[in-house]
Image (cartoon, rainbow, N blue to C red; front, side, top):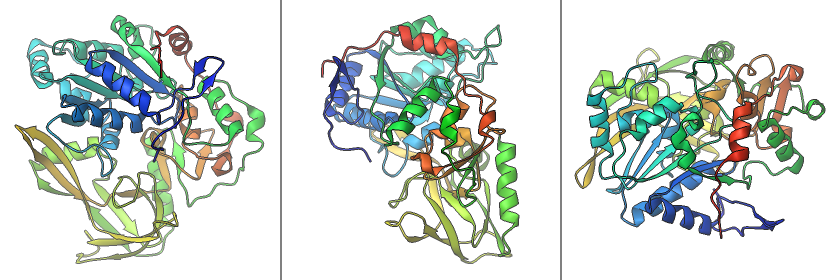
Length: 441
C-alpha cells in the first residue's frame, strides 16, 4: 500500500512526479472532469494502477460517471478486487475496452452497427480510463475514438517500454497506439517515484534495461542458483505449463481436481468470461506440498502472495472438487489460511443498482512453479527465477520480467549472456518529444 502523502521534491527545477502525492491526484482528477486527455505513464513499480483506482474513486465521489477499462482481461481483473474499485452508480466496469466499446479485433472489420452499439454503451460517461495502453494498437484506438460521447475526459495508462501490441503495421512493426494522430492530443504525466524497489543500483539498472541498455557486469552479482519454491518466468504458456506439470509430478501426495463452477449466468458464456478475464484456472490440479500463488486480493492476501498447500479437505468424490484448502503463506503476517472457492463475479449496472451477470467459483490460486511474463505483469515477487534462453524474444519482455522482483538479491538468473534487452526507437522518440503536462504542484 502506498503512503497517504508524500512531498513532491524539486530537483534541478524538475518535479519528481509521485503517485502518492495527493496534489497530483487532485490535479489529474480535476483536468479529466474538464475533458482533458492524459497519458499516465511511468516505469514498473511507480504506482500506476494504484493511482488509477484513486482517480476513479475521486471522480465518482464528485458524482461524475467514470468508465474503467483495460486493454486485456487480466489487466481489468487487477482493477476489480477486494481492495480495489467498489461498484457504484458512478463507476462502470472494470471491463476490457473491447467489451465496453463493442470493438472488433484489429484483424476484423468494423461496421456501423457495432459503432452505434459502442456509442450507446459509452453514452453518459464523463471520464473513460484505459489501463495497459501499451498493448493496444493504433487501429483499435481510433475505432474506440469513433464511439465517444461528446468529448469526455480520457485517461490512458501504461508504459510503452513494456509489452508491445501484437498487431503489426504494413512494415511488420508493432502498431503502437502513438501512431494514431489523435494520440498527440494526450498530454503525458510520467511517474518517477519507484515503490517496488528501494536499492539505488537496482533502480538504475532497471531504468537502463527499460531503455534497452543491458549491463552484463550487473548479472555477475546475481545468484545463478534457482529457487524452485518460487516462480520461474517464461515467454510462452507452453513452457510455463510444462514447468508446472513437471514439478507437480514430483510430489508423491494425492492429486485432487478442482473444476470451476458456474453459479450465475449462461454456463458457456460464463466460462468464456472466466477464462478470458481472470487469472484463475478452469481446472486446477492440487496436491499437498504444492507451491501456489494467490491471484486475487482478498482477506489480507494480495495478488502474488506465495504459499504451500498443507491440507486439502471436503466432500470430494474420487479426488474431485475439494471444499477447503489450507495454505501456509510465506509472509509472516499472513501465516496459515484455510480457503474455499472464491466467487469471481461480473457485475453490470442496472439502473441505480448493480446485478451479477456471471458468477463462477474456483480457488483463487495457481501453481507457482511457472508463469508467463504476460501473466506476471503487475505482480511483485520476492524471488524470481529467469532464464535468458526463455524470455528474450520480444521488446520489453526482459525488462518486465526482471522488474517483477523487489530486490536484486531476489533474482535468480541462468544464461544472463543470452538476455536481449532492446527497445523500439519509435518508443524512445515518443517519450523524448511527447507533449508533457506541466504540473504546478
